[in-house]
Length: 291
Image 1: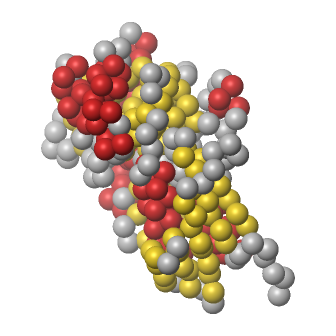
Image 2 (image 1 turned 30 degrees about the vertical axis):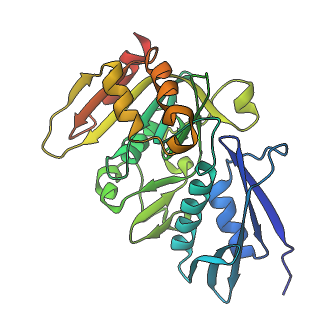
Image 3 (image 1 turned 60 degrees about the horizontal axis):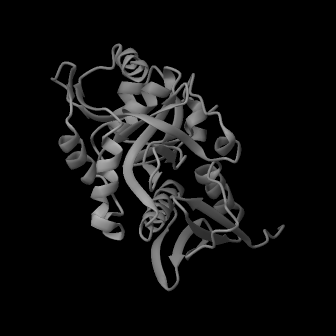
């Protein structure tokens, strides 16, 4: 059997780099599936190295002597790797605001959708991609200090199983099962499977593989089955409070990031929306972006 030589893949985001080491074709396929669109910056050395392996169908994920996953579920291994990489990119980040949130772009105007798990941001992101919006991320957005540019961690979409019936008309999950990594808690879906999804962001930074757009709108989405569409424009103070709830690296920043958030909200309008169907939500977002 042909031997797969040791590979070392660096992933750079938010001015931090983590390294992945592996010597298995099975692991290499997972790494490519998850991180195909994540760039490497050779001038930012990794501060953490993950050791990945697959022996006789069993995957393992180590960081030093610590075992973070071991098992034969490829999708669970992928999910664990995504979680650990994201945590360690954010853990020491101190150059700007690292948000738990999704991000999209329309004609190079960025939208930040902050929110914790379960608020429906990935489902909404997927629907907006199908309407022609460009993809930044469904999980992490980084805004460098003194900037309004939102950089997205361009991983595959991480959809809860409850999203399947909502998005079935946009993506045939059964037909594309061989291109999706699924486990009990999530479907990990490549963005290119979403019809009309775009990744054609413009600008020099995007030519370097950085998913980035200047932010023009902050949107706090909340899906509620019995709630018709409502939109509330937020004050600067309200926006700051909500953003602080989703700021992952607050402990690393001066004033826990509040001074930077205060600066940001002075120039970017924010809305809190509730909805039970998507309807013409994309047109409302475009109207806000173009006003």
